[in-house]
Image 1 (cartoon, one colour):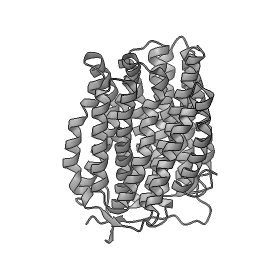
Image 2 (cartoon, helix red, strand yellow):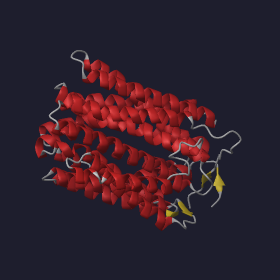
Image 3 (cartoon, rainbow, N blue to C red):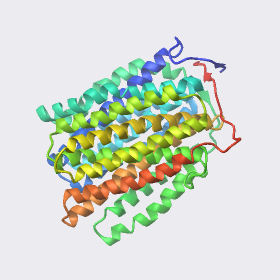
Image 4 (cartoon, one colour):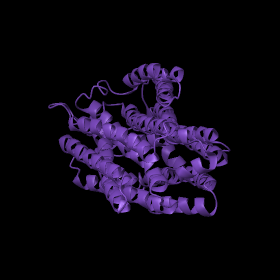
Length: 465
């Protein structure tokens, strides 16, 4: 394979670009739809204490999907992990849509997570492999822009489907689109082949299993209503630390300057956004009495501003790692402001929607700037030949921290319910934990600039074969 200087929309990459955008669009529709209608799961199936697992189950399974897909991406074409991801995602949709209980629905979400994690990693690997450094910022902006149509239509459409038919059709309606994605993307992905040595491949997959199991024990222990279950959190913490140390770049947990802090910052800023998003629907519907349709419209504003933030970072990108690190910090600060706005709105009696929307737009703008920038910066700092591993690390940072954010938040909500506290107080506990993650994100992104004198890798694209 030889290097070539491909732009984003040449004849060589046009099909691939369309495939990536379609895949992201499909994933966006599902994600925004579930966030919008999730309170209806509780109304229909019960199980408020399991509410956080609707999100954290998906995200923990995404860890395994991301690692497995990254290993496949580093040892052959991208077609195999693409099909693997779409298959699990489709089965998960069918199970979730047919679920008679909350536990079965969560099982379906776990299957969706396996597929979703694989799809996210394979999309990032394709961007890293097929596009030069100068075009990656544009591609990251384009994938974020793929959330615009789902943001405009997804939450509102999901609310209408749920209110006129049933929330189950929100899952079932996505299934036929998977076949279209396969037809339009398989050939382009099969041409992106790369052979790389993966001597630790089996160990990485075991570490991912170790991490997911440890996170499950941790979240179960935190939300347990008995001491003998609560102690599960202790071995869970040990397993989590061991798994993260093996899967993430050395120094990530200690916020070492450069790539480790980029990965850590990426995870914490993403978890802050997702953590608030998971409980925003409850805040609006259960606390303030707004309809599902209104909730969908509010959630859409954050997705639109996310796309605007991603477009803005692509316009500002000049290839300098220090500038990229600065944009990550500014974006994380905007997310933190958005979180504070939701805390204020939680206890307001008037102008609630104004404060919620302003805060959510700020948070969306912030994550659009910081999330896309972190991807570009991470690939620029990645060691040669480890694009797949860095892509996997980015996904693990996203999925693990977001699972902890939603899982611990859900556990705190369950604890408040058992103590007969108000739902306002329970949501406050959950968002307070999210705020702590945002603060860690500010520290990490402040340290994301590479060590002075360290080389930044500016790469050419790989010619599809």
